[in-house]
Length: 303
Length: 266
Image 1 (cartoon, rainbow over the protein chains, first blue to last red):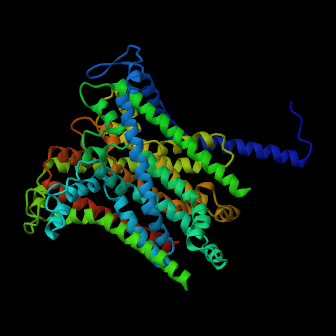
Image 2: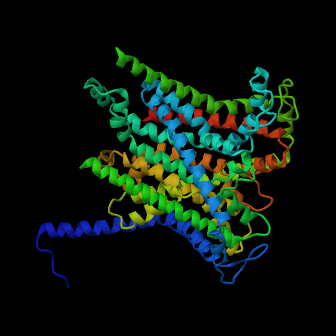
Image 3: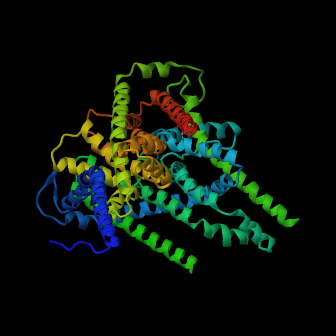
């Protein structure tokens, strides 16, 4: 038999912990459906990817024989080049989005409250429009006999249609187009909270606009820059649809190669798995790097 | 005086950047809409106004099937992922919950991994388990990628939650069930609607994960559109796209309305 709690305080504590236990149980019960779902359809599939990456390919399927070929192939120069291309594309896309997105976010953040919402809606509408339609609209615009070439030739700026479609430039252009809102929205949300009187104060004290920008605006909006870059860079690394629809087959990106290995016959699922895991690995490294950098900056800011 | 002009210069630069980005964002869409009424087989020049591509759209059974599939998947995955979202957000409200880190990790990780990897991993899961790909597998995939968004949106709404209302209800002797349905749920509703709308648009929009998890014979609109573009028969795609853009605008307006109605009703 347990001793009776001696004081009211102890009794209260015991009751409290009992209450906490039941609340904890309730929390497990409430989160169980999503937890189970994500274990079965998010974690387990990755386990299968790991297993498949060590198997032998078959024309339509896989053979359950152990092999390291997929990894050996994944690190040959051809595939490393693809990986490099994807990194290059993601980096350029992120930088261009930042460069274009920052002034836009700044402009919206400094607009009057009433106009702010309208301006935001203008940014969000394309973001809500179907991705494939947005890509398709660029095909019409940039095509050899498309609208842009038509207009430029009619004004007499060019005598021959430009071949923009199916170039690497078209891929970057459409990537920036698609991912720009993902950069603008987080930038806006930090810039909106930014105390612009600080800027005014700095300038009253004699700082130039440029100096005030680099010593106040930029450091204070670093969180938005991180968030936006993350939202652009990571999906850009795995891009498939945009390079597929506006790019050429000379420059292949990782997303395309992975998809071909799964969809095209002869299939090579071990290879697709190994490449997917490589991509996952780099994403993980990027994330860790970004967060350390972010935490480092923040700590320094607080010190 | 000089500083004044620099300030104006910056303001002007931002305005220019904003206008340029607006042009950049809208020109292609605008052209697409205009050309859906163009009476030409290929996309060159203006050949006069026509509605015939809309008519063709109406008679195209493949598009109608794809539309039905898209709506079915979007509706069901929205419903299920929103219910998951509500339950999970309520469970995560408890700050001392021992599974908090595990679950928030599982919720956030899918968001920072490229979509294509979820597609690949689910494709392999369905291959490994020998499940026939089709409607059910697409639905499973869509629920999986929607859950994270619904949980986060509903949770963020709960975080700004005014507990004094719940306490007041408790002090007045209300039963837990009554508190939930009369106080908490109405306060959660805007978050729930936002989450559902987000899940719905994400589901309609998805190409890559559907591409990996749908078998032959089960096309959603994005899959159908991509296939058509690849085969080069694009005349109806303009009109189809225009209708879908119209639908987007409708959703944007509706959300604003819903939000207004909800705010005014409270």
